[in-house]
Length: 269
Image (cartoon, rainbow, N blue to C red):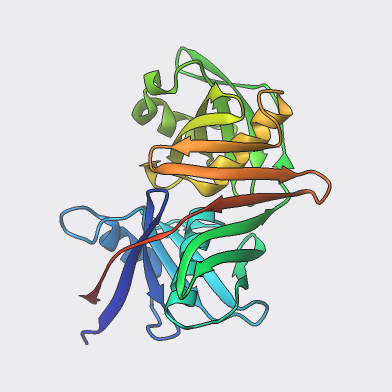
């Protein structure tokens, strides 16, 4: 039986996903659909699939599937997009929205102009700090990084020139390194100015993406821990900037940025 599904393509700082309102369109086997729909040429093209649903614990729920079909714990960019989606489509009038994710309930603060969401600040919760100056060897190279979890794992590596990194080569090697049995996201970061970072990312399950919200948070934490920045900085990624504030008193990270609807359409399954 053929079913027609309405979807919305959105991006936060270039991190683009396909969004489905599962309260209207329940989906079976989203892992397979994420793989098929994320492909270029034969699909919609995206970094993955995001399901917006009901929650018994929060205003809404979010499930995220990467382009390879694996399920992610959390995505800051997707959280901001969901805030824009539910508010602008009239699913809520709240300007503070709670969102259930696999890494806990997140609080989304909306800055609006009329019915348009201009910016969203996400309370990302407390960072879990692993090793600092961890040495990871791949082939003939040794990388020194900081391990931070933002509900998902990150390895943050500071370099002199982020543009010189062969991300397509070293990204998958580090993601699948034996030290990370569940794989890891990998960020290469360059300090470009006072409290300004330039970041490139290899996302676990998706590969090179234009942005990663949790990766920006992890990079800001690693920079503050190692004395490279203060606890508030701007993280500039290939897809655009995010402002990250580490409130040590509250032990939480606040991530602020925009969200954009690219286009909407239907697809048959």
